Length: 283
Ligand SMILES: [Zn+2]
View 1 (tube, rainbow, N blue to C red):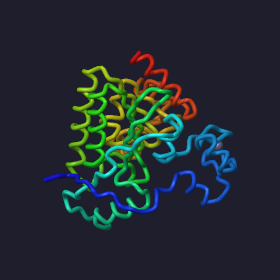
View 2: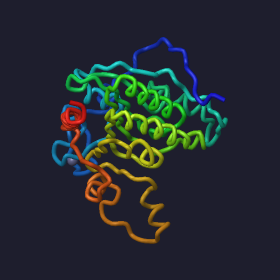
View 3: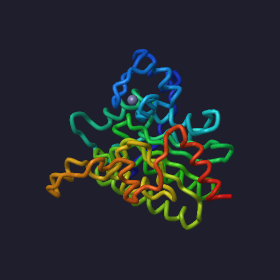
């Protein structure tokens, strides 16, 4: 049985841009960290980072792509794959209905955008997970799209960058979603053997099956400041080991200090950091 299929492109209005949607919600926003009232335009110009305390707000996949790729220009790949709902899953509503609602809300077919573009003049493939689409969860479609991106990297030797934001595997696809961990990891191993660079960027939050597979398999694993990164949530761990967890547990900074990340890089410096790393890896 196929776990994913292609949907014919529909004719309609172009997808709204992240910035435009934000602006309709009001002109001011309160920083959830320091309490500062910030003019939304100032926040946008600062890539959604608080100008006062440097708190990194979450951003949409499209805003992320625009921030990483030259002139915000890129070509979208594999945008027509959709899940076939292999289990016929129903929780509070049928999975197919949930997917339909998400597609309308995000103008995406699943929780990922895969593109090719230029980063400081260098051709790259970039995949960005969209947290707003069922928590950025990984099912058959995400698994296939990432695997195709890896295979394109293998064929062309263009570096691959994946920006994660995810709650983990998609429970509505059960064991099928877990198989994606192995599928992607095996493809990444071939990329590693071919010595083509893969850079993983972990943003708030990156947890579960995504952390347990590709997000931690980069040649470089880079965290965003203050991002929550882990496998199980802190409450589950505390209940299991019956111990209080240390301060800052599962933040980028904590993981860097304990050797699980290679760097923590501010959003405004991320593009230059990746460009420099790729110079080191490739040239
Ligand atoms: Zn702030």
